[in-house]
Image (cartoon, rainbow, N blue to C red):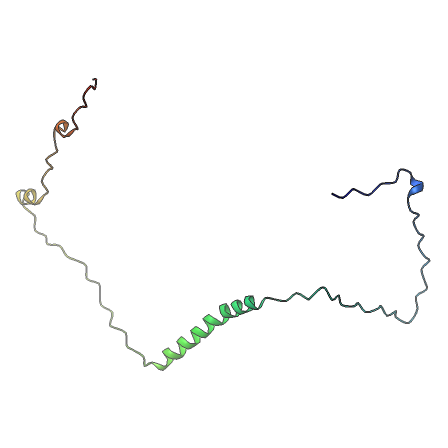
Length: 129
C-alpha cells in the first residue's frame, strides 16, 4: 500500500505561487504553435473488420435478396387469378329429431353413478374411526 503525501503544517512551507507575467502586446504576425508529435504508443481507434463485415451483410443481404427475387418474378409470365366465388355457408336440415331417437344416441351414464363407497380402498388394519 502506498502512503498519502504529507501535507505541510504551516503556510510558510507551501511553495510560492509565481506571479503572472504581464500581457505582451499583440503582434500583427500570428504565432505558429509547434506541431503536436504523434505518440507512438497510441494508435488511432479502428473499427473491427468483423463488425464491418456483419453490418455490411445485414444491409446488403436483404437488398440483394429482394433484387434477385424481383428479377426472377419479372421474368415469369403473369398468371391469372382464380375467379372469386361466394362463400357457401353450411346448411342444416330443418327436421326435428324424435326425443326417443336423441335419447338412444346420447351417451350412457357411467357405472360409477350412485354410491361410490365400494370403490374405495379397504380400511387398513388397526385404523380408528
